Amino acid sequence: MADRACRECRALISAFIDGEATYEENVRLRQHLATCADCQATLDAYRSIGGQIRALPALHAPIHLTESIYSQTIDAEPRRLFLLTSRLGYSLAAVASVLLIFVVAAYLIIGGYERGVDPAVASSEPANLQTWPMQQAVRIEFNKDMDKDSVEAALGIFPPGEEERLVITWDDNTLVIGANPPFKPDTDYEIKISTEATDKWGNPLKQPFQLGFTTSSSLATLQTPTPESVVTPTQDDPVATEPASVVTEPATATATQEPRDDQPPATTAPSTPSPGPGGPVTGTAVVPNDPVEPTATQTQPRPAATPTPTEQVAIIEPTATPSPTATNTPVPPTATATPTQVAPTATATATATTPIEPTPSPTSDSIPVLGAIGEIYWRDQAVQERLGKPIAAATNVAIDQLDFQRGVMLTNDARDSVYVLKNGGGWEIFGIPSGESPTPEWLEGDIYVPGGTFGLVWRSDPALAETVGYALAEYPIGYTGTVQQFESGRMIATPTTVYVIYNSYTWDWFSHSN
Image 1 (cartoon, rainbow, N blue to C red):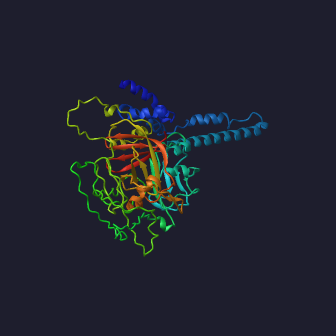
Image 2: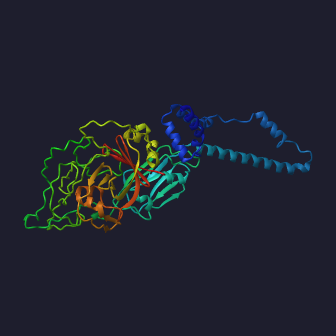
């Protein structure tokens, strides 16, 4: 069976190198190359042939052959005097022919050299991690002529919704993104170009390109959103108008609760997250103690810069609905919302007291990894190593998504909690607070105070609101996504993006072509 697979894959190697293989053939060949060292060696040998040919020394005609040709053509003595002008004409024609040969040869030599150069990004404006004017376009220059369609197919922009909104054009070998319409203000952007991008001869990009930057903003009120809740005085609470304390006494855990192995350590979220998700996590989610249930009502948030010096407001937590299951429900240090931290995977722990006869189940080697998830999983060796093997087949689920200035929110499989993916700051799962869904509010710069389910979560924790910033759209988008569980995390595929959520509370994103 292995020899047959090798024969089939080796027949595709030439088409793969020339860029003529179909997408399905590329996926099948990459999967086989990941496990077959002999076929990988064959691919490397094929790729080296071009370089060996270009390394051959140039050959020149023998001098005696050149002199013989000249003696019988250009330098031949004319038979008659009137043929002098004809001889001159022949000489000019010969010189023109030689010049033409030199021009063609130079073109072939230069073209051959350019074809042999690995395509790469020569420069970019802005540079990585630079602050960039929101009205100015981003320019990414390549070192040679590129297949523009393949570059655009391999291009990914985060936040994901911006890829559809921003205009993408070309200036010779330079990819131009944005300018009209402009970027969103005070927003973290990340641009990725995978090695699926090729030059006009089909050579793949030598290394994947990644650029992170933050747009500037002249609007000071947009820098630090801080949702607030105003306490309504009641007869039972005569001091409700006093500022609420940020220290909450931990509740006592019940005897039925067991310690969670996957609970992340309690650390402080980063004050200045770096642009772009993934990468080293500069701070993880705060995991406090069990919540104390408040009774105050919540009002519409507003930016922190608006209260007057005489205002006295208290940031508190909305009334929470008890969960039907026994889970650790943490409270942020500001005693506001109750983000419910749960395990990144949906594997349940068996508690039956009577023995159950085991039933055969699929092994990790027999579980397929296909579609957009398979495209990223099989293409990126680092993703495979960090996630491990699949433990369940992919399933289709309904997902809502809303992009923010410094992150993204997604509903989970059951749509009863929300993933919050924070740029440079890991990820958390928040339970959805009870209460009436707020209405989104438009702000200057075409950004929004979020409404609906995501607005409830955003308003529940001032630290979260400051970390992710404002929403980039008025309403979330809904779609059917694909979710697959792995040994050390999960992958979520949307129509344009694949999110890789690791159990280590880090995450990454990739654009896909499916």
